[in-house]
Length: 262
Image (cartoon, rainbow, N blue to C red; front, top):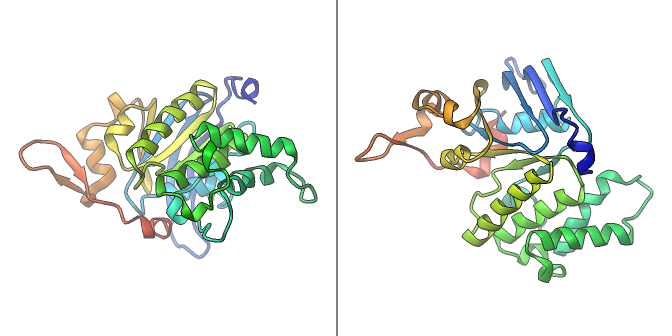
């Protein structure tokens, strides 16, 4: 796969993209212009209801653009949802969940092969869960469940990963492991687009896209993440921290995040 994605072509690119939900009078997002190339880590910042999930839906093809352009490079993107919204409460093992990633690239009549199962085991090893392959998904900790969902995306063998707040509510060991893994995946040539509320984390990534229904800014975090841009991005969600000039974001309500974009 990695030879394919290192061609220099963007894995996803948009030009003044707009998208609206059926029956809506106004677009949920508009004027979105950005690109993710192979090996790039792009942080997507915005408030709840700012359009992050809508952009992911447009990239995965769940929501058609209403205007502008959206182009995908090789392969189909893999979405890594937050574990609290994965709805995998029925009795399946961590290996079963990881193996679900093979379904997207198999004909409907084919069952996962021995090679697919080997890839699922290897993906669980990469996220540090090789000893939990037979553990029921619901019995894992929140951080472990999030890592299993990353393993499922790795089984899809996609050149582009869409990460929906992957560090939200997970334990420190899982966060450290995922951060190192994301760096490794970028070094291998995958592109990563990560929705996050963590401004300091976004500063450490290659590029940042700031949106609040419309695009606020896109580019190098050192140049983009000014106080003015952050204030325009988060608006009333920002509060000043006592005793200094910095800003903090009020805690997001993850349980209604998906619906907020609508």
